[in-house]
Length: 535
Image (cartoon, rainbow, N blue to C red):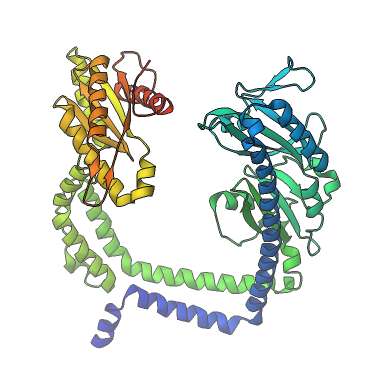
C-alpha cells in the first residue's frame, strides 16, 4: 500500500492527464459505430478548403494584375513631362487617346495643386476636389486606389486611381485621377461559381461588396452592400480558423479569404456546409452522442485532478495577494502541500525562492522603468512623471519654461545605410551631446525612436531658441565616428513656451509637448536642420 501511495503522490500533472486521456480515447473508440466518419469529414473539409483556396488565389492574382495595370497607367501619366511641366493641353490629349482604346477607363483628369479640376470646354469652370481622399493622399506624395462607388454621371460602379505629380525637386504639382469601370472584373466573376452553392465575392477593406460571382448583370445591387459575416472579421484579424459560419445568404458555410492589392481588397470564397456534408447528415446524431460522452468523461477527469491541485493553488493565490500588499518576502509552508503533485510542489518552492529576490528586483525594475537602456538617459515615462513635477514647481515659482522636441533628420536612412547597430550608437552619441550642452536646468529624455525631449526650466522661448540653435550646430560639428564609419548628422527642433491656456490634453506638460511637436513637424516640413517656434 505504501509503495502505491508513493507512486501516485509522485505522479506529475502531465502523467495524470495522460492517464485520463487514454481512458477517454479507449471509451470513445469502443463506442464509435462508424469510425470512418472522421476521416470522411476531414477529406470533405480538405477538398472544400483546397477548392476555395484555388478559386480565390486565381481571382486574387487577377485583381492584383488588374489593379497594378490601372495604377501603373495613372503613374505613367503622372511622371510624364507633360504633367511635370504643366502642359495640360498635351496631357489631356494623351488622356483622350488612352480612353478611346481602353473601354474600361471612364475618364482621366488632371487635378491642380490647389485642388481644382479645370473644365476642358471652359477653363473658367472648375471643380474643387481638395477635400477628397485621393487628393489628400497625393499631397502626401502617395498613390491611391479607392473602394467602389457609383458614378453620378453614368450610374455605374467605378473605382478611382490616383498618383501625385512631382517636380524635379520632389515638389507637389498636382495629381492624375483615373476613373475605371468594373466590366472586366464582372466578366471574370461570372466564370467563378463552383459546385451547386459555391460563390466568390470581392470586398473592399471595410467589408463592402465590390463584385460577386452571382448574377453580375445586376451588380449595382451589390455595390457597397456590407458583408457582415464572420469571414470578414477573420480577414481583418488575420485569423486562420476554418470553422463554419453563417454566410452572406443566411446559410451555414465554409469560407476562405485572401487579401489583394496591398490589403485594399479581400477575395472571399464560400460553399455551404449542406453541400460539403450532404452525404454525412445521418451520422450527426452518433457524433453528438459520442461528443457528449467525451465531454462527461473530460469533466469527470478535470474534477478529479482539480481536487488534488486546489489546495496548493489556494496557498499560491493567498501568497500572491500578500505580496501584492507589499510583503515581498512572504513564504509558503511546504509541509502543508506535501500531498500535491510534484509540479505544484516545485512551483511552491520556486515561489518561495522568488519572494526572496522579489523586493530587490522590484527596486531595480522601478529604476530601469525610468531610464532608457540604449542611451542611458531618462525615458519618456520619467519625463511625464518627474519632469512634470519639476515643471509645476518652476511655474509656481514664477519662472518661464519651454519644451523642445528634438528629432534626428533622416535617421531611417542611417539605419538602412549603416545598420541598426550603428544607428543605436548614433542615438547614444546624440544623447551624450544633448546632456553635455543642455545644462543643469534642462531635463533631457529619450521620447521614442530617434526623438528626444528637452524640458528647459527658467528659459523663455527666445532663450530656448538660442539653446536649440547651439545644439543643432554642435550636432553638425560633432558627427558620429568610429573605426569604420563617420556619420554626419543634422536635427530638427520644435519649441513651445509655457502658456496658462491649454490647447491640448489636460496637463501643462502634455500641452507643451503637443505644441512643440507641431512646431517640429513644421521644421521637418520646412526642410529639416532648423528650429521652429510654436506660433
